[in-house]
Amino acid sequence: MSRTKTADTIEFPSFDASKATDQIRAFAEKGVEQSKEAYAKLKTGAEDTQKALESTFETAKTVSNDLSLKTIAALRANTEAGLSHFEALIGAKSLSEVVELQTAFLRKQVEMTVEQAKDFQTVASKAAEDVSKPIKTAFEKAMKEVKAA
Figure (spheres, rainbow, N blue to C red):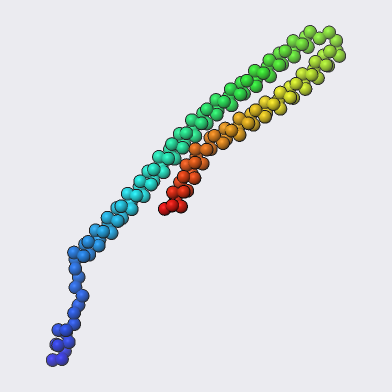
């Protein structure tokens, strides 16, 4: 008989299905909310990246036009200098005048080439900075958001 009394006094924990359902629902809602937040961040990041790429493309197009115009101007200046030099050589009266004209022309060409190289370097440096700026800005913003999260 003592066995029966012991069995009557032991309580087994009961399983409350409504509490389990509430916990599962809360867990699922939290997961959905986190997924929405992650999607929103991903969408914003993708939009920012797209804007940065579009801006970079437009800047590259503008820079390319600037470099093309600078190249055309340099070619024009070199051609005009060459033609002027050729006309001067045709009008030369002596060999010493030809040598003098040729020496002056070569010196002027070297100076012009150095100046043109400096101009191209300046334009190319600015171009590289301008083209990379939108991507750099987008990357820095993304890194700040990652650190904040």
